Amino acid sequence: MGRADIIASPSVVALAGRLGVDLAEVARTADRTNIAREDVERHVSGDSKQSSTHAAALAAASRDTSYWDVDHSAYGPVAQEPLSRFARIAADNLSAASRVIPQVTHHDRADMRAVEAFRAKLKPEAADRGVRLTALAFHVKALAACLSEFPRFNASLTADGETLVLKQFCHIGIAVDTPHGLMVPVIRDVDRKGLWQIASEISDLAGGAAQRKIKPDEMGGASMSISNLGGIGGTAFTPIVNPPEVAILGITRTETVPVWENESWTPVPMTPLDLSYDHRVINGADAARFMAHYARLMADPRRMMV
Image (cartoon, rainbow, N blue to C red; front, top):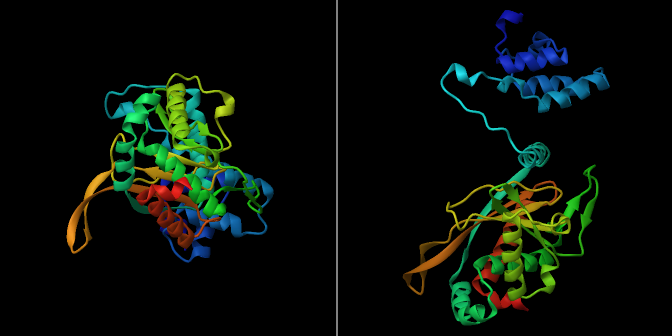
């Protein structure tokens, strides 16, 4: 099998060159001529004679994006917009999470009839208190109850991936879309707070994030985070787990769907839910149970007030 027989993309050829790997040898080991990036990486990882230098080069190559270096102006007019420091840090974190975490997303939905009826009943009191009682406050409260019921979701893996740290507190991060980028302020001790306080803190943190007035002690240390796109739209998405958390809950816009009950079709407001989780810690069955419990709480909010 000669080099002329090998089929590989320019990025794979470049990777092999940086690692000092002979593509012909990779082809012989793989017993095929069509070589992908994974074949080169597997060849390096599987060779016990490879030095630590090669291992470091492989790690660096996994982060290399030189093959994206394209002169786009050759194809038409372009403009450039430098990323802010905040955006660059977020991009690095998201890229690292995507590389390290074997992430799975479980989709479900919640019957919102009881929550909306309860909110309508509390509307006069909300006006008197000067608090905007949104559905998000109920989601935060339900998530706290689920974390108590399923403690492995309220945990973090140590950096070496060998120890699970089970948290004895319940802090919920709320992803906020701001003109400066995505921020995730944290509501502390949600399990000890009532709906009114949670609703008030959501409003305060969202306003502070928009004005870049979030304090350092209002960020970080969350048990789990919520990414709420309900005010924008969509029917489902795949939120990225925000390490060191092991799960994140996505929420999209409530929609009215027909549900068969009492021998007839009933229009029911349902909120789509998207639970992404780290499969190293959480298995699919536990994720399904977690979301089933969550949906039961939202369908009967009295359960989460206990």
